Image (cartoon, rainbow, N blue to C red):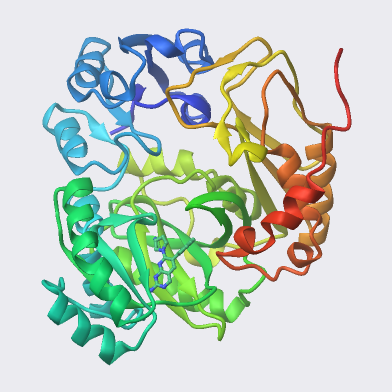
Length: 461
Ligand code: MV4
């Protein structure tokens, strides 16, 4: 069914991203906005907008009855959840469908399956995708935990079955630490997720985070668009992502691509999705989890494949078959994304909301800025601090880095602190240039990065 109009159940840069895709497809958009977002661009760029509640997310972007009622009143065919908020809430997906709105995302049962990390591990194992040595069932008590940990060998990691994205994890180095942490971990999981189930894996030291983008249509076609490397993160917030991974060869890409496709097929997946892997220092890949949404970092894949992932996602929801077959997919060049946050790196990345006093977006060849900010815009304090994604493309990684450097230098944001100086310092580190990346990179070089943090080149009086 072709869509005439869709509701965008999100805000910020991803709401704009979805509105742009819809416009190019000739689909009208209805946006929703909270009391804190009255002057937000997504309300202006959409064809219609509906005020949905007070500024706190619970009253607005998480308020399911209000969103459904806006969708009904404005007569939309479908709802796009973006990322965050309701994107991975299987109940929301179900409620959309029950009310006659196509959910532009995977089937509710796929979201539910992948939300249970023990279940997700089982599915991967069933289709012979390597998983990290560990338990296939929840570990009920300390006695069982000790037995498991001894058989896999320390260090181990305790993970909440209902966790994910780094929430509800504890690294354990020896038995005495396990004694101190196990029951606490169960308790924390119960409080955070209403589910105390814990499973245990061997802890992989200094891994790389590598994820594979997939597209699956409603006719059983599944393809992958290669991988992204997302190892540059801090406290489970990604800072820099790139495609392709400098550590992945074409042979490895084919292998992990097949793993990702196999998992998607096993659960009858539909829509855009991402299968996450850890790569150990020996170059082995292990399935970690699946993200059943479009991700923040999807643009780097768009740049190296030439495919508009959000447009494809909408077309898939319309029931259209994929425009591409696997053999049509070619990875060309290199793309890097820096996430620009309204945060002060000198104050432990404390959010730094406020008014943008002056703004200039970088440009020139092969630079993309996905952002909802403008000069005079007031960043509300209620939401996440991402204010722009800066994406640089080059024929080689080196060219992409050089473009990124000059684009970061051109970027003018006055009135608030941002992570731009921090990004400049990272991309200038010899270790980053040499692509010696791992998930503890920022931790390891934090002092060096801070001391080399590069203040803006240009200012506006
Ligand atoms: C791990 C791991 C090492 N060994 N599992 C963090 C996010 C969540 N998806 C799983 N995570 C990890 N799981 C085992 N067995 C290390 C991490 C991890 C990590 C993974 C990806 C990106 C950043 C990370 C930062 C710290 C820990």
